[in-house]
Length: 416
Image 1 (cartoon, rainbow, N blue to C red):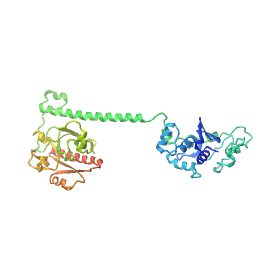
Image 2: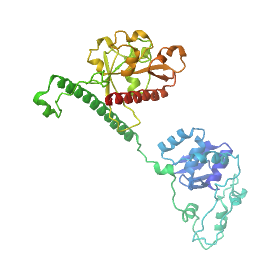
Image 3: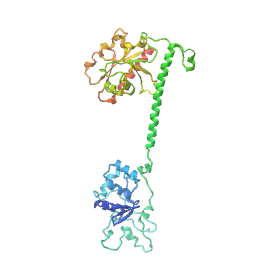
Image 4: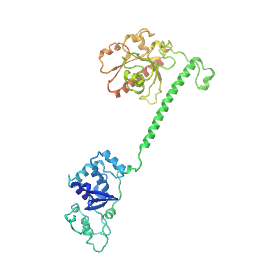
């Protein structure tokens, strides 16, 4: 009997526990012994013949999920049964189907026995191949052996494995090619992750250093750099002051104002995550996460854009308009409105028309809020931005709309 038929027979009879591995052989009770590496007649859809070792391990572990089964075979260095072959192979070995196109009971001809006919599938198993209990005769399985004994001119014992391998070539499937015993790609993954984290850290530090240097240079310009300007590579020639009346932005980092009241969606506590990362975090949640006192000023930059070559500009975010000096108002480019009249009390402007002609206004709201919440805001020249209460993946689009509107507004003021 061939290895595949023996394995199927033991599987159907529920005697898999009698299949024991001893060194490099599988012993099927006291009936048969086959090499572990013996190739069976079951051909994979990828073209290779499965070995007996592969099929024995699979039929004893077919209840495992394919991912767990595949990992176990890798750890033990056993070629695995591919996922497309699992069910057809299981159906055949358990007797649900009697045959399948994947089975090829073919034995190549050997120069030692050139006139031996190739057995057909019907020769796979014959009753007279089964040893008779109590008999002292050793019955060798298979029809080939019967025919080989007819050749009296040779005294050699027929080696079936040699017969099979004379006309075959080794094949490997995609899974076998990727197997490397004792090696994995975890170290490659960790190394690449560390490099990416280091790159992001350096970029973040460079942005911070650039902001500090820009702030110092601008402060030095107002005081006068004297002879140090050439050494720093900075032009100390005083630039003309730009004032709001004339519609241009004043010197220095542009300012964005946000309400100090908690009933608005955007505050100084969560503005950085929204504008830089495109993620809305409720103020009450952010306050619990923050340590220390509330900051007077937060610096934000646009970290994402449709234009990869766009120059990144830094903005100061403040929530205390009363603390601004007269020259600071020249730098105010945007405001997130609360929707209340008292937010603009003591602002250096005549009315709402003047405010939103010289400052870009934004009103952030939940998309399912009532229309009444934006009733007053709709009377002003303000851009209403809606976000979802639960779908945080949509925040990025809302933040990008804020940046696009703000940058267009800043460009128009700079060129007017």
